[in-house]
Amino acid sequence: MLSKTMEKGLNEQMVAETYSAYLYWSMAAHLHDQDYPGMAHWMECQAKEELSHAVKIYGYMMERGSKARMSAIDEPPSEWDSPLHVMDSVLDHERKVTAMINALMDKAIDEKDHASNQFLAWFVTEQVEEESTASAILSRMKKMGDYVQGLIMLDDELGSRKPLYDLLPKSE
Ligand code: FEO
View 1 (cartoon, rainbow, N blue to C red):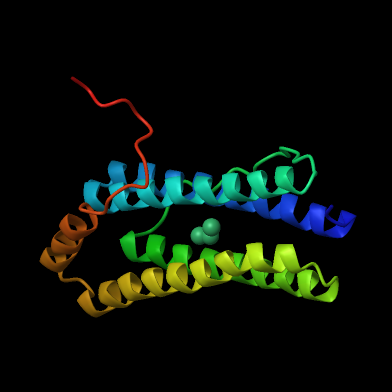
View 2: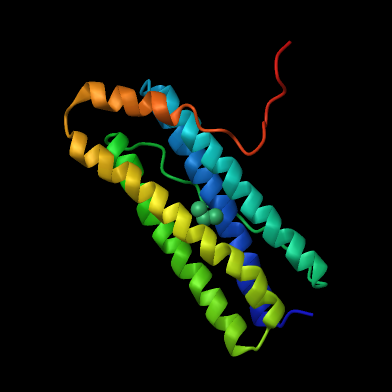
């Protein structure tokens, strides 16, 4: 059984992961609107991954005999100045998520909750990948500066990302 503080922390993390999905979905909508379909697709894939993170926590809480509570999700921003601004915001957001995961891991260590420690280790590793990926894309965008063709090539490249799963049914 989880302690009350661990239960509260995991629940907050589940909500934060759901917000992440909402944020990236909003970025996808913005990028579609700005005619960057590849980047929008990449962001939709990212949103699906975030939802899977929320579900992972939900499943763990159930396994540990806790009841997850679906609290309100904040409204994310809907406008960004440029694709670079979008990716800069992704990296900034992922750094905040990393800090939340680390704080949860600290709690698990303090409480000698070995099961939660093991569970959260997956998220610690995942955050390294999430920050590294966002940072690499942002770095390329910064090097491109105002080189529009470079941005179009990057858009094509990001459009080839394989989604974790499909949300919409495939048309016949
Ligand atoms: Fe689930 Fe991108 O943090």
